[in-house]
Length: 226
Ligand code: ADE
Image (cartoon, rainbow, N blue to C red; front, side, top):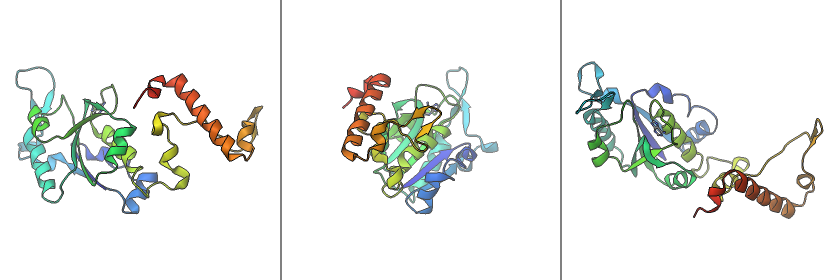
């Protein structure tokens, strides 16, 4: 899968994909991530990419021209399955959307800044608008990093057996059950006997029960989801 990201602060995206599972995915050739500096695509003086909002009001608006220049230059080599704008007024990102997007070949992410982007870009180029939660970040870069991480780890071959996505929280609309490792006893706190029993069927049942309990306590809304 290839993910291209258009940003005015591409340096913000240097580190999130340079380590751990994302690095492995890239090293294995399963994930390609390219960051494109929007300022390389503007024809305005001093690499300007934003301007005052028509009608007045506080805050600058990202201009359509540099963004369209960047998008169309990328489209010369790549046909995108989705052109996604990261914005707090988009659909809220969740595991189901991550699963869907992990099946695509080419994604283009556009990071917003300032007061947003000229509506005409949203009307004519953007195919999907995604928010990572009900709070406002100073730009879309961290949101883009969240998407790439959540999507990238689902690409077949990225995770090995130990890190398999199948037992993650939110797969099956359940939170993950508690986990334990050595030592068997720390201070007076013991690992539940069932996990040491070697009875795999009973352990699986216990894990499922714990996942249900945890979900009912913390996120009862998940139990009623499709
Ligand atoms: N840009 C600013 N805030 C955001 C959010 N919550 N999600 C996605 N992009 C954003």
